[in-house]
Image (cartoon, rainbow, N blue to C red; front, side, top):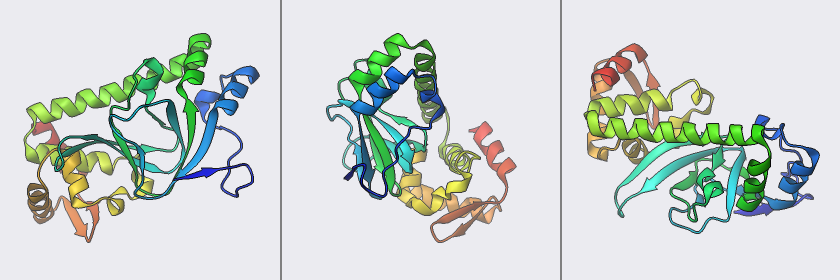
Length: 231
């Protein structure tokens, strides 16, 4: 982790995200005075589940894997977070610790913004509060979808969901598969690495995907969607 100062070439002066455009000049000054710009190198943790949280992270640019940690061998990957996403929104609403871990899949630049500053702005700016609450609800909807899949779908349905998500239009430009291990993919699907490798080979044999080293190319998206629906 590297703190970036105004004299560094990586320094980004302005926050261009749409959600910040509703802030008044006074509110922008509050954000500017309460933020720290940080660069996380590939593989570093941005947040650690259970660690005390005094700030929210805003991703300026980069790619982050969001994970709920279990025991020493099992984790559940929730999502890929990108440029423009907030990490740790729950701390604005009096959550004292981070309830998930995040890991940089590539060099990732963020603002650390104190939760007190954001809480103050949310309390006084309805448009900004709406944007924050909308994002918070989107994250909760994602969690409910993951819970539903874990409860009702079998392994092939979970893996199909994972492949569809990681190859979705939102992530298409990132070539996410090249940044993930087979264990990472297994942790997205909530199944073992052995089952993941076996199912990937079955999907390839059936003409649904092509495997090229770490990379996975989707050959038949419609068929994967059918497997997902059947569960």
